[in-house]
Length: 571
Ligand code: PEP
Ligand code: MG
Image: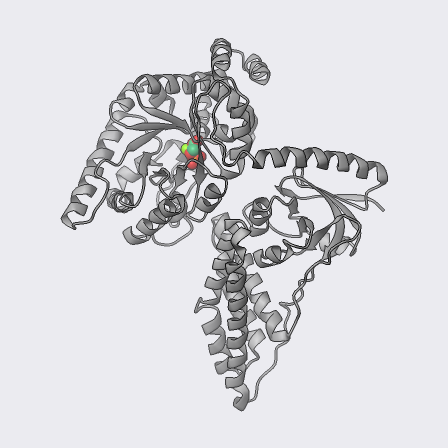
């Protein structure tokens, strides 16, 4: 009987194939005591199993040359977990102190680690607990002498749909050569590794289906719609035919997109456009590199500070910034100074504000915490010696905030000179245009700064007085409101006249439906999530900048939001 299940769409595309159920009962291991004379042998058994999994992971890592860089990063992370004293050393200690079997000791330690991960607020870091589970599962498999699971190759031309509670990156590498058409899992989120790896391999995936493993039978025919988050089990012939056609259309589109990776982005009339990536943590730079972004246009450094008890010190920050520069190999990397407050809370924050979005956030917070700000500025300056680093200041409203920041930057430079540490003396400093006051008094910014970046997410919030995190007013959040468009246009035009580069790094830049509008406004630098780069590049390649400029001029005269929307759709 045919039925449909809805989950979270995490990797686009259509997949049609037969179900392959992956079991997940391995972590329910037996618990028994070991005779005193066998305790050391039990410890050795654990060590050997860990060494064997490490060797297996290292082998996969070495052979993962053609695999996406995310997979390589995950394998590295799994090896790191196996080296974490909280896991293996502590399990060894448990075997000795409680005289228990190796697999049980390891699973106990895993549960402690998992508990710690569960307490983390940041979604990306919290989901790393799944990696701990998977690496432990692999060791347990070796301890129990289990063979690995690989779906068999199909003869009917259809691929395999892997149905699992959760999947590890090592599983996905193993599946690479086995005609896996798609993944569906009980758990997971958009930043979970199944999602990340599926996206990087361009395999459709739907996660968070809750009990899919219990309702699907092995070998059953399944359709995954990875764009809408829909899974159709045992479809009838009519539905199957409809999805076959859709799948062919999606695949054609995708293969065309991939060919755009190494192409320079330029409009039909020859206007060159830079497409940069937004990242949140250093490993994200690998994804940016994977789609051949022109650089990093926004590194949101607050993610280095969130979900931890103490702030990262100068050395830790320096290493993080330098590692992104290294990954981007000579391409520009724009690092935004700490933008906390409002929806991005630091652990143990003591200040309670009634209106945090209008309160002590971003640059206001940094200027109120000069010691912390100076530490970040020194770390940034030190990293500037290793590549093309640019410093971006968030949420500026008035020129005195820029002046105070530049005074602190000079102080940080003097401190480094005293320590005889090298840095780029002319490191460019830019400001985010996120507050209408800044967009309306741009001269004060262009006189003091080397570049500008429009944060449309906040510019929309502050122009329309819509709290971007409040669901009750979410329907009023309108990027195409004429007031917002005029502020963006004015910023791009005024910046360019003053000879200052202007980019857009808010969500609007990554929306393919806004690409022609922004090109028409004169924008030549876009920064967005790496996954959006190729689609936006395609729009740019199809755009005629001169033609769009005329149309956008007319569109900007409209002041009825509905008419603006219609005009944007017609562009
Ligand atoms: C923005 O406001 O558009 C922006 C890019 O910054 P964030 O989303 O991090 O506030
Ligand atoms: Mg912002």
